[in-house]
Image (cartoon, rainbow, N blue to C red):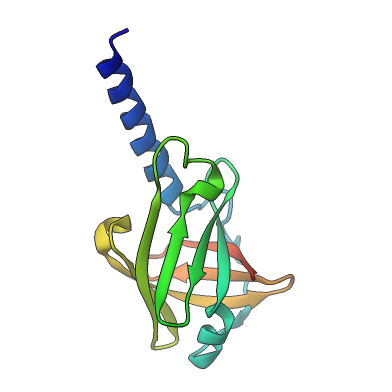
Amino acid sequence: MPQHWMLQRGLALGAILLSVMLSPVVSDASTGGVVGEPLKGKAIKNAVIGKRIYLAVPFGGELPLYYKKDGVVDGSGEAVGLGKFLAPTDQGRWWVKDDSLCQQWQSWYEGKVFCFTLETLPDDKIVWRRDDGEEGIARIGD
């Protein structure tokens, strides 16, 4: 096979994997009606500042998002093994508005703003519900 064809195929596979990784997890991490204790205002900030929030991704694994005190959020797909195919990392901004955690990435989701309500669960887990109706369960790490 010509090398340029293999490169094109590799780039296409990487793009597919990235789009799958960034897709909301409905079947694997849906809440199934689980309801936790709602987080509001300052409690949202306290729950995420300086923490990694691990989102489940399709086909297993987790995507860590690190919420910095200065309002920057870092994400890296390398933790789910995609780093060898492409560099699926992005950085964005986060803030709290009307009892929701909002964030905007530089390139993920084409820079669209999404806001989430959060509810606490046992074992350092949270239920997240995005303003477009998607939802899932994530875990809070250090």
